[in-house]
Amino acid sequence: MHPDDISWEQAEETPDNWLLQFLDLDILRPVADFILKHNRDNTTEFVSYNISLRMKYRNGATVVRFSQPGAVFCPEEKVVNEVAVMRFLMDQTSIPVPFILHSGTKKGSPLELSPFIMVDYIEHETKMYDALNISGCLKEERGILDPNIDQDRLGILYGQMAGILL
Image (cartoon, rainbow, N blue to C red):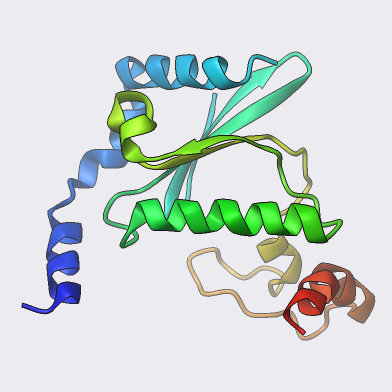
């Protein structure tokens, strides 16, 4: 059997209710304790490949993001790569990147839920996806670059990243 077929079968075996467990207080409490252990200074956002939990404080917030099993292959490698990219962007650009408080493997997460990244929350008005997308495009549809986007705005959003690649 081809390794991709094995990975595909393993992804299909992942329970559909993995995301629903985050509505259980017996899961949320250990996750909250885990966040507090790594940053002391509850909104849940369901996205395609991760679940993000935000703990708000008086003077800020912390986000812990867990990779969703079955949504990606090699979730631990994904997290390691994301942390590396975030640190690179932080070091090489002025793009606002949240400070990484902690990251780790499934074994290092509370209740061994999934590989994770814990970061300081950055207040924002919109996401880059929404800023670049055609106005009114449904989230369920694949994003399409707005042909009427202001060139200065596009330059600001992509300029530093393009400089890195070139």
